Image (cartoon, rainbow, N blue to C red; front, top):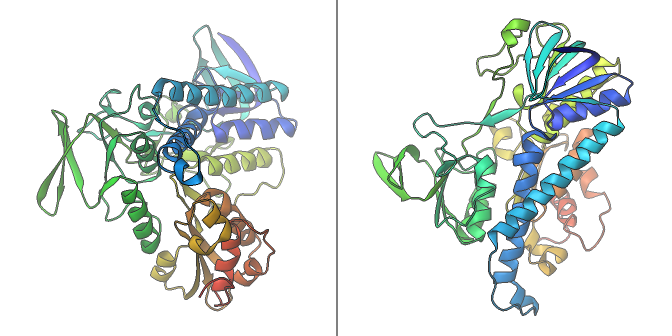
Length: 463
């Protein structure tokens, strides 16, 4: 066993871990980045965010060619799916991304240790690789081990029929009947992919609505759009089992049955601390088995930090990235910053749904008096030209001060559009500030401006 010493060791090479490593290296620290996969990028780049978006993009091209090209004067003829070619492209996208990270790590002189890490003390981890085991020590260690799909105890993943999102990005062919258990972002996105490609998709959700964190009016409109696209959506249904090609559920005392040759279980993710040996370092977990941290992401053990999915908060790659950069800066004696109140969330279907801050329903539940401005994409010139009229922008502002409290967007490229609202909220901007900001014409972003104006009933292009 060899020994190496560093200023900082980061366990986990996902978005939180590699950003932490790169930022710390920029600040002059000697950094080791431990990753059990042969490539950096964690779940996000290898089997999550990036490959799923590649498939979403490819399936959207197919949907356009099959159902919309003719209306644009484009004659294509017969349109067929080549699933292996689509999966191959997805894999190439992943390879390009993870390859880029390897180059960045090398350029920043970050030592990458490939293997599984286990704490052997408060300042030491043992990294077991295929060829050798390394004992690495550092004054500061960051836990960035991410999360794993939640498995239903009565319906374990077999990787073939009952699958997680890791498997659903690599189906060798389009399933005839796909049942998605869970109506959150992952389930809706992958359900959309395979639905566009020809699968008969049913989404079974335990809660009364899909995309449960969004306002009721947004979800109603979103649900109608997905149903129009062919997805069957069953809410308020508790899954009870899967046998002989049939998934069963209960709703209001009635038994529901859904034939399926594939069942995608997408009911959430759990913090991943398996095999870390946290007890040897004395690191405490909370009641949900997340690593307990303070407001600066420090654990109860001096010198040990934790970031991303493994701590409380939204399990989102961009949140993990901000955690990682801030921790690197704090360790280096700089003023790190994360505004956890302004982490945007996005469902990457078509149209997308995006949000930040407080929704109207949540604000009212807290007794906060609000003003709401809405603007439909159906009244936006660029959206009309781009066949993107579904949905609308919704701005929620304080009724007294006009300060923007939150926003929700249902529409094409909502994930891109939400960033402008996040920016205004970061400096405490008002709906009037948003409405008085010049937006280029014609763009779909003009709907953001109009919704800002609509908060105070002064939208220009609305009745």
